[in-house]
Amino acid sequence: MTVYAQQLQDLERLAFQVSPAPQLITGHRRMLDCNQAFLRLFGYEREELLDHLTLLLYPSQADYQSIGERSEHWLRNGQGASYTDERFMQHRNGEVFWARAHGFSLTPDDPFGLMIWHFERLDRQLAPTVSLTPREREISLHIVNGLTCKEVARKLAISHRTVEVHRARLMKKLQAKNSAELVSKIIYIS
Image (cartoon, rainbow, N blue to C red; front, side, top):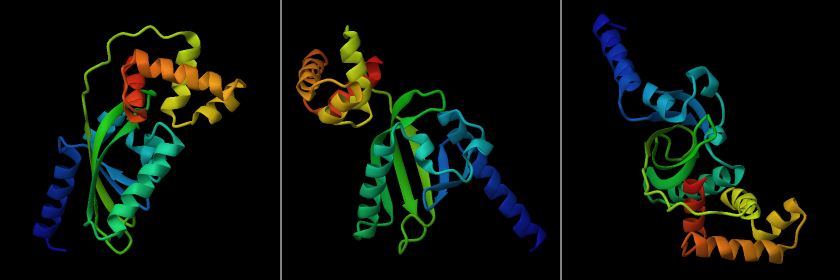
């Protein structure tokens, strides 16, 4: 390698590391490299992330699974080499936040083989302060993690009808029109 080529490679590496855009490079959903802005966004040290599954950055296993399936389906079915969505992500301190994710596959025949991702934290208006009962708060934590009313009922050893009643009250209190909106509003009042 010539001196010029080495200098160019060093500059490219520096540009990646100091870019203001949070970026992550993955191989089969395993974190291979990330820049400083990404570390700030998620609150980790670089060594804590490298060679770990991106599951570490999701609020639940269900979110990790469903987003993975959706993005892989999009990439494999000829929609292009890039994928964008809005999703919940989790900071190292446990804070769940809304983010836009842009992924680009460098290996179209094996979409997750090698990808580069850009993340952007989205600021949403906070829901008005709502007073939740202790049971509503307990149930809301399970709803945020993707559990159905029956699954919540089994975890809390109560009737699924009781969970449905509390869920309906949460929908009304938070003025949510659907489940996705309910989850979003629960996260912002927590």
